[in-house]
Length: 342
Ligand code: EPU
Image 1: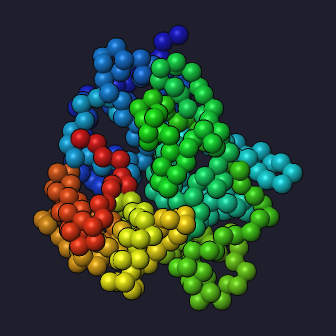
Image 2: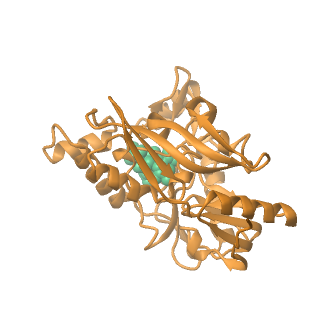
């Protein structure tokens, strides 16, 4: 039986990207079921249209208009299955990530409390292996289901098949544009340990006298830290971290450290070190700077903001200037963390 899909034309995406830039898509469709997803893909194939999946639009940055079909995934649902030692939770891709985290916290289910307040949808979470305050999605990941565009079948991916890395997965590489995530299953717990390994988090919890923090304490603390540094997209347009934290060789790090002894770092392997791009951008004098309505956030230099009417191109030009200046000052080329369209 054929489904009646409402496919709109020339849709403004200002309210579908948290940077709040004005960009249009030639075609737009909201899908609420897998059957609708199949129909929408068939439409795109018949018309020869490129497909762009948008969840919350919190990690997609439009430099200009998109000439294909935007698929807004609104598939909803959650299923909790208790096992002896853990709880498997299957969540549909269109659910809001933070609302889902809060639901788990309220139910006393742990594992993703450190990932509180990350904007976006559940389906987007595995694509960049979201991470914050010592936890990455892969730490609690069991499997996911995706609609494969070529075969039109649902395929299950286990953890190793997802090839997770730092803000990375197979869905950003080999399977980019080939698979659409429809649900994610996580392995969570009721009586596990909370993770307070991230310095800013443990410092805040200690200052509150919480020596044995609960899941809710950790979630509240993460929310407090994020709110103090990261702008709320409802108030000021942004896509969170605009760049990835660069991973450099120990040799290059030692050289930089001798020049900038206060440079923070996180070990990756014996030979590689990750350093905060926010620190580099801050040190290069960009924090709080503004060119027209395109700006660098005043409390976290890794976040580019739209003060009002900045265009995608204006923000992209600012990003390019920042990249050049970081290359010149530190000999490091920053790469975008956001998914750039255009
Ligand atoms: N820093 C500065 N100046 C700045 C920003 C940061 O000196 O303007 C320094 C901080 O003082 C700290 C270090 O850089 O020593 C790291 O800063 P922070 O703890 O804020 O974390 P981050 O490395 O800048 C990453 C993620 C965030 C995540 C936080 C917490 C990336 C690209 N970003 O930021 O993720 O919330 O860690 O875990 O990995 C996102 O992906 O959108 C995001 C916000």
